[in-house]
Amino acid sequence: MDPSFSAPSEPTRHHLISTVTIWHNPGCGSSKNALDYLKEKGVEPTVYLYLKEKPDTAALKAVLKQLKLKPSGLLRPKEAAAEEMGLYAPGADEDAILAAMATNSKLVQRPVVIGPKGAVIARPKTRIDDVL
Image (cartoon, rainbow, N blue to C red; front, side, top):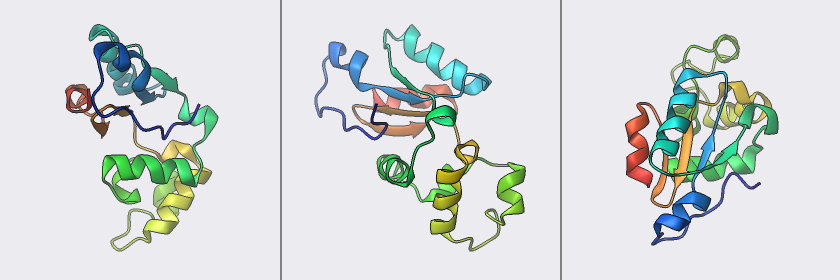
């Protein structure tokens, strides 16, 4: 599965079933809640287990473009590994942050939901409505 797909510009409800992807961590309560929220809305998303499948730099760049964020905006807060690497320091190099996330996908904030109208970090889960 390509986690950086582009969704159709004018989806029907049927398209929502196949054009929504969630970057999911089954061990995260916020990620589970986002997945449940999608299912409650009748959406069966493609579930991308980013901790196992480990997005490469190209996939991260594609999702960052859809999120309209720099790598620091997708960096998970309060991760010891990121702190040790100095990734939270003011003026931290965005390329270094991107490279670190490609090497250690635990540094990627979750859940990311990609839909027909763009992508969001689904915190809170109701942000998902913006991309459906």
